[in-house]
Image 1 (spheres, rainbow, N blue to C red):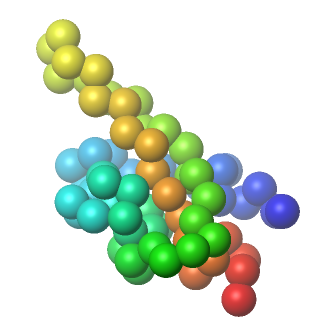
Image 2: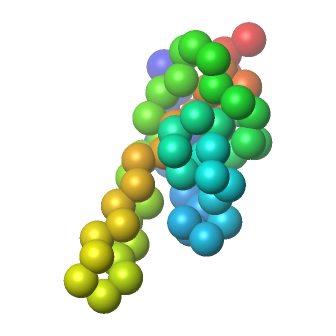
Length: 66
Ligand SMILES: [Zn+2]
């Protein structure tokens, strides 16, 4: 429970892969998530009237888990 993941700068939506945007892959390293994923935060963007807020996830690969 270091909280490090939440303190990292999130990428922009344009930088995400489809899997990352869908919450299926780690936001930091693109590793496909299996279990132990934690929310890395919400990328807040909007395109005109459309709110594109996207929650992204990180796996043990990047949250200090082994
Ligand atoms: Zn990762």
